[in-house]
Length: 251
Image (cartoon, rainbow, N blue to C red; front, side):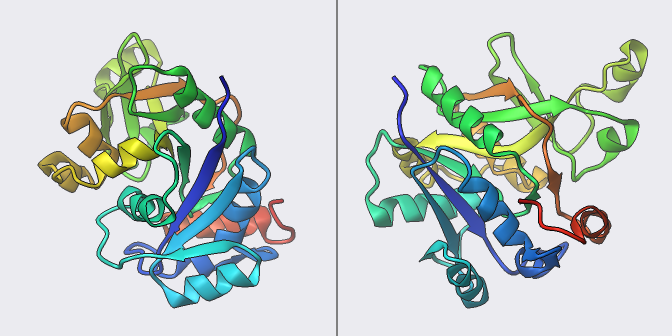
């Protein structure tokens, strides 16, 4: 049975590689507004922005978003979302989709897809998406997270390093899969996740989903049904975004 789902967008100001990126204007809107406008075109019953920064709060309320202010001490976006779930007392079996606040041009269909993916799984705590790695540059780029999965579609490992090893990729012409940073979880699992100890691998890779895998919670992966947008991590990404969306809005 199809269930309702919520979208929560975690947004912070102090991004290490590109400070203040959530509020950088790209075309007609700041980056965060682009993401919000994509999310409201999905089938979500509500879209909420979670932040600990008053500048982001003011901007988000200015373009009509619902905002929940959260603690500044969260280790990850998922921890921030868990606080929102607890504070709003969302039902335990409700599904929440975590849409990253830097995913410019994310198709709303992918938000719907990841929510439906989790609804169909009986043995997964989380769901996410992947797409083929397109180039050797992507394979070597630490900002492009790679993923490998088992025969059931459950993730085995996420890494910023090339996986599988790139020598094997060169041999068969397949460069592997890149992770699309969008997640679906039940509210019940989010409460569990926030109480899990941070693992060393999560800290080394700076990938929050590794905490779930480390503690034995499966993540089901599906290939994205549409081309993804552009994740803004670096000044180079921002330059590309400005050239692509500089004259008009993404939505």
